[in-house]
Length: 550
Ligand SMILES: Nc1nc2c(ncn2[C@@H]2O[C@H](COP(=O)(O)OP(=O)(O)OP(=O)(O)O)[C@@H](O)[C@H]2O)c(=O)[nH]1
Ligand SMILES: [Mg+2]
Image (cartoon, rainbow, N blue to C red; front, side, top):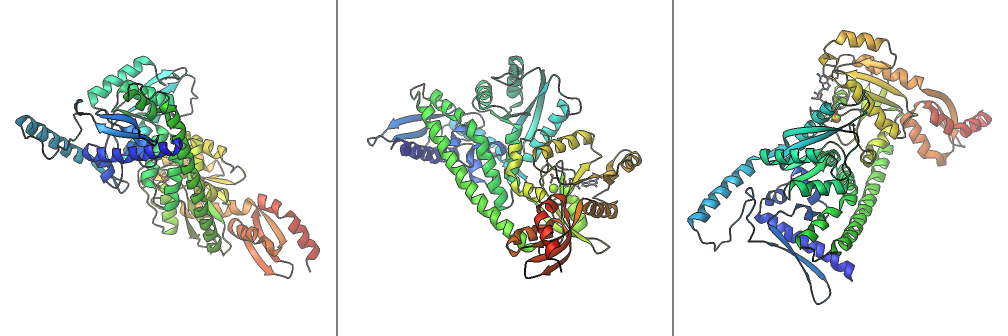
């Protein structure tokens, strides 16, 4: 009974907040097609997480009704002055004193200012919050990884992609992070001064923070300042970018999984607001919230599974002709989509922003010699990308793991090309794709400071091709290299597949190069080049073929 009541309370709370937001600054987030980049994380999915955004001038009341139901309601607290940026909608019967008029004018100005700060990002309107970036350089960090300044400049690019306005940044060298606040107390004070001086609304940390660290920092910085980390920011970009139903489901799932261990803070906030009267209540509510969230995660997973099954069936049907699949992998912004577009005439969005692509797109590449292969564009990788987040993009992973060849696209003109290569290798090493052969492509050769030097270096290696996906330079050589790699990496087999192995046959068509298929009474007889792992799978059928061959 109590459990149900709490769920009920959460829902009441949500609608009250919506009502409040409509009167206050937050109404923008709810009325517009997209929420503010950072707040969307907390607002969009679970009702209870909305508590994260209770502004300072709202008080929370807790009461118990006859039926033992716990009812929470939120009221505007008239004794507290609204935050200067809040747009107050006056009640209709308000006395129009000069003082009020002045205040209304001020508020109108604020409203106009706020309206000016909505920007169109990723096809959606988002509120351009002022952000401050914070990084930590760990003493003893390996030299060939990203330096702190480079990492922060990448974080700035991410913030810009998400629609935030970066107004400043800072970093600290530390032997180990502070368990309570991640950074040292001196740095915390420095950031607090910057927040006041620059009117900062969001502080973004370059590394993943624990729930406790987020809570402590928000407490120190003050009620209106949001604290989030790189992962939350990336999730928010994914949320804005998700164009298909499957991508939206994947992002929602990843966001919920990110929120689950971080649910505590809003309820301690509640306890604080009520002066400790509800001590212990927060703890129970967290359990209820977690259960609600877990249930929602379960529902989402089921829905995703059915979408995936459908996509797989569609893919199997689509690939009826024997063509191997080549997947494009690489750092975000390396030029994967541009390469796909150039080779296939596809119209995948390619732009100078991080994470332009979320959904895999596959197109057929027709070579001059009549040979063909399918090319798949995938989501880009980035340093400090939690594997759980990559795992959320199973569609991409499936495309990669079922491909016959991985082409690693590198922006060779980038000053941190080597570090980006290492970051991609690191993500790939965490995925189960080590058995898939690779080819490396050094892209954007047209943009390199010394293209000749780079070409000479590439010639020394036999697994690298230099191209410019933008101008088309080097693309025939790229296609030849793909063909050679595909053949080299495959094993010649003749096998007889029983009819019940229809799935295997269609996968072989997909990943191998089938030269002949013949239907016999015992099954399908094939002659093909197949990847080594499939040759192993086919071993018993190869023996069968030898014994039955006429
Ligand atoms: N100069 C130059 N620019 C290129 C080349 N290839 C791609 N670009 C540019 O690089 C930017 C990123 O290209 P995309 O194709 O979107 O990169 P991506 O790897 O698909 O990026 P994500 O989808 O974010 O992972 C775009 O502005 C392209 O025009 C190239 O060969 N030369
Ligand atoms: Mg792309």
